[in-house]
Length: 315
Image (cartoon, rainbow, N blue to C red; front, side, top):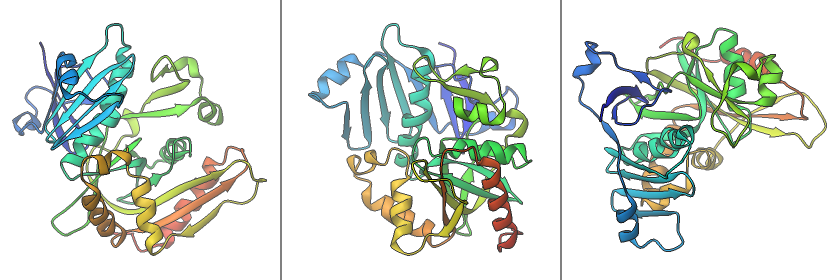
């Protein structure tokens, strides 16, 4: 079976499964000589799943490994931060299988390799990365798309991979050149959904190629903005407040991608130590917006004004 080499989240992947969302490392490129970090393989996992005797659970962990099942889609097995094994169910939609590889599977691999995966998006502003965290539907991708339209390139969408450099700075590694936007966001940007494919058949969330404004190099992280939409409240001005103290730790733990899988893998202490280190090195703010109006560009203005008044102007 033909395998392709990809680069994403600061890691080098060899995959038996075609992943059109990822950046291929071309033959002859210097990255071809890099050691492979993770292998993605397609195999029949049915017997292994049955041997684990998981009962009614769809997620099960053993030392260094995590195994999960998605009904109608397939079985997924992550091991020692080095392998993702995938067993699609007959007739499963390929895009949905890839969605789980790109999301949950890669996030688990990051955890196993002590890379912190935050649920968010990130852009580059004046040479520094700024991440936008929040629950699903909070507007993370919409805000980063609005910033990108103003000339601030996208680094990653959905998962923000964080490591540290030799000087102790938090570093964001680029993900892959695609964003996922809901229909309401397309409407706000005046984009025609007929020009884009949905991420899979069951949702009206669209895959937007972003090669022309994608930043493909690692960048130090300056700050995180938590998005806190309150559509049930009457429309008012956008509020930005600093998050301090223990609330920072809670925020960072809450917005770790697939945070419920941390303790299952015995990684709770690692997460606490990691977010404590991160909290001490960056600024953290919460952006609250009320009502249901499209306010992405107003938020962009507030963020740029805040950043330009801050201390992160040179590396």
